[in-house]
Length: 197
Image (tube, rainbow, N blue to C red; front, side, top):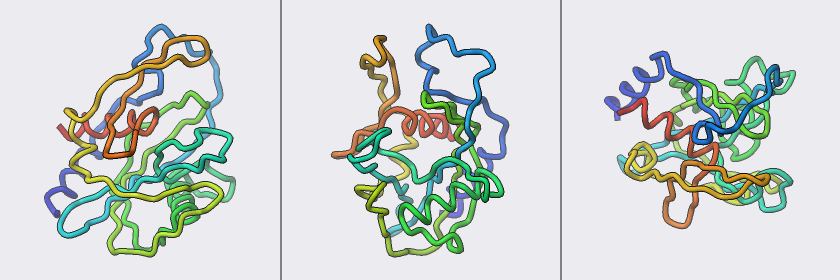
């Protein structure tokens, strides 16, 4: 465990390139001068029986944006948040009941630009003890765990596509059991995976 955390800290300390939902779609032209809203998502690592697991959420199917999709806990930075890290921690507390005081931030990945106009900072963190998961009913349908080794293994990723706004869009996926992890979440995980290899 200590070796894994040391490796994560080391790779997060290295300079990296930002990612975006458009990385696999080079024909997309992004408007110059576009304004992106800052956001933070938390990638919480927790140990269970000696295995490092990543906590993820399934968004409520009643939500207007990205209903039913797999996501990190997180969201846009509010005026009261000191920075995007604070936003990620606050959102994790609100969405899944993760107490901030048991979270140790290990570092951040480079910014990820989403199709919805957010500049997202993925915050990698260690959850030092077990906690009572409390999904926010209006936002989170389910909270689940995936072995960290699964989502940090490039062999588990594939590139798929579907039509979006009249064009074919390609994206990463990293499925796990019944969970179809794709889009921005999978892209950020792939960026993390690439840094760890």
